[in-house]
Image (cartoon, rainbow, N blue to C red; front, top):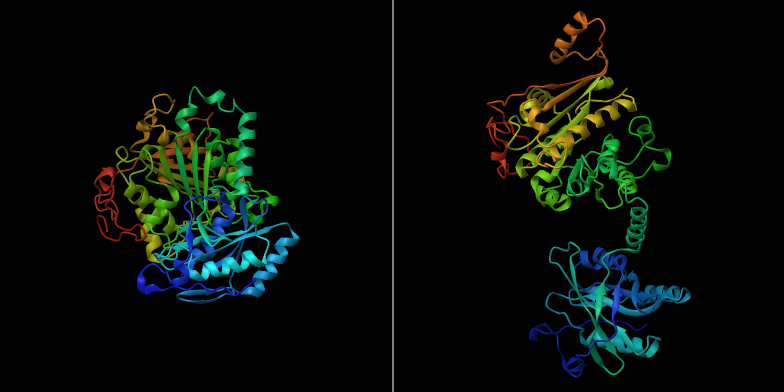
Length: 503
């Protein structure tokens, strides 16, 4: 392969020189190339994340799909030129030839505004056409990268022919990878096998209603059965956020399996959800909700503000105190229902809190102010340990979470059995469950009295809805009593409000 140089005459604004002026431009489009999604993503990751004058070679296994790409990482570059590393590229081309992959083009990036092949591009293409079997023409797409170098690119397709013609090249980019296509086909086959999967619950949870509901779950390990059960209720959209991978300790407490160890928790849950409802949409975000993620990025990743607010539930099910606080703030900032849950140390009990803007008066901070003060004073990150809690305790909690979820998501849905059922709990939006007598709380005092008078009754597992009132000096909501009034008023949820009112 010949040495390749891309040269520019920046003074005239279009990169032309005498040789370039002699090129013939043909307005007739050549055949269409189809760039696979996998190749496109690799181009974005390499050329799209670096300054202009980066390049690589393109290959095709069938003459139509560009399904192979090799980034020229060893090339010599200047701000206005790109010189191929001929040795490494020839080595790759020989490997391609041995596997019936045909070299069809060179892709490279130009500075902003230079979207056509340069004189150097023409010279190189002509040398390649003469020396290699490329069918008398060579695909030479030009890339324009974003000034942010964030992988966003524009591809301007051209083909250079033996006759010194530059031809506009028809090109399209596939949106789905081969793996995504296989998964889509598999899901279609699954859906065809189970057309009646929601038939038995359709009278209480109509399929067309539930398909519009979305659960965004931050912290997914212990919520696995909750999410799977929500899918069995017809919930149509899930966003799963968790940076953890399955460990062997999760087998006894989170319903995980040995075969899943080392895989992201989000991915294995997604697999189970789609095996329940192939038509569900599941987005996996394999990272933690940390301060590195801005509110804007959270919105973009989760689609939190898309559609009716009442159709989305944001769940804070992480054991990180700051991430859980942030979930609460995000729900208030964007006006969506919220649910949070945790198991108490030793598995003695659990709690579920929830808010519904315009209905519940107390915000999460109102309900948990004593815990906030303790955590902020100690500067700890955990919300407590569930060490010692067997898996059935997690399952019990998930059942309470799901019942509450259906009341939240279906509050205004007249066709469901949960229509306005939340009214009964609007001022009792803190649920506590006791599994063992060791859990002492004032909420269980009336039950202790019943045990004394009702000899034929016992209460081994009790869930109580505890009355809540807004806190006038709440640092988060200011005790407004109207959570809708907070919509859009929280500047940055990465900060915990320390003073009265919105920080």
